[in-house]
Length: 242
Length: 233
Image 1 (cartoon, rainbow over the protein chains, first blue to last red):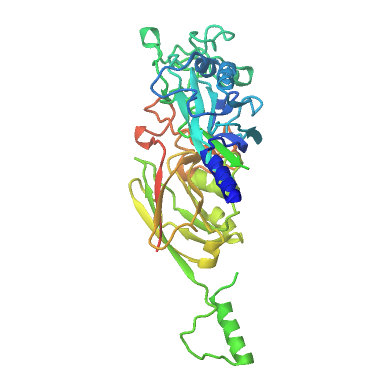
Image 2 (spheres, chains in turn brown, yellow):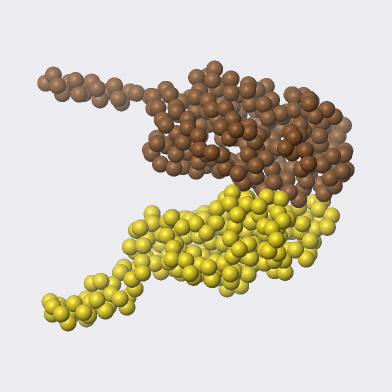
């Protein structure tokens, strides 16, 4: 019968379809006690796109994000790969415990994976990330706990750079300290790692944590060990599939 | 909340007014079915005793704390001293609570404690959740928490195992000094660097560079801190 053949044809088209557009409502929460998360980049992308791979060197784009909080190049990479990208949805750094406002992300085509990244501050090159979470297709609310990563591009010396203006640039050693952190981070640390020991690990890995110290004007670290250490998970991602 | 006594009364009244079609003493019509659970908690840390546990079976929509929000005074007492009295008194007045179970004393590292819970099947079907709170004993305001674990999906004989994170109540600065640690240290003034509930950053200890800390490396931990097995009996 003509009608049943038509129906069969339509059914076949649906079966072969690999696209799935979704309307996502997203929130990101910083779970850490005294450590901040810098501006985020969030994106839905296809299966062959990844911001990073654990065990491999970080891209130059990720290095800029992890060392200085600059997510522009990661964002551009994701857009170039056809991703649906939201820049800075939390409108600035996320304070400890703070949850971002809800923001929307509409996915298109075969962008069925979600990633995000934001610098962990204060660190040398730490960042929080979701690295290609499969976006659930069923409506509902889904919660993901995210861990802290180390980009492996800068030694974790845990002290301010000699010039704050350039400390966040790739291949400049030292932690950049934004104005909102100025009175919370110590000074005068000599470095947890110095000299020949101060070399980057060379690959992305789960952050081993910071040492810090209890000397705000000296010691080895400018990070406060009593207030600025963390344990995983460091962030909570809530995705509501509409 | 209906209980056995109410059902029995109603049954009795029906018999008096209309005559019972069935005078069988074994007739249990009107008695709500029960769902029984066994909850087993293990302290997975090396050296952080848990204060007496408070296990709460409650309505799905209820929350007794929230990440990113200030904690109640009752939970502050638990976090700073381990004493659950104020927290439990508040739960007794709370009609979102079906029942609570109380731990018998401290739960030391590596030790296990079990609880049996009997709930109305209808409540479980409606979405009863399980929460748990206790202090990490050798901290300023550290907590172990289970937040609203679903029960309805468990069939008889099935169990689920989960691991719990450690939290910082956000009420006391983590100085780790002898006078602020453990049961002595309640201070109504909240002086923490962040005043809301967050995931605990772990303790530093004297061994790891916090000079005035009364803690050693033995009291350090990583997540998770507790293992919970919930079994539907």
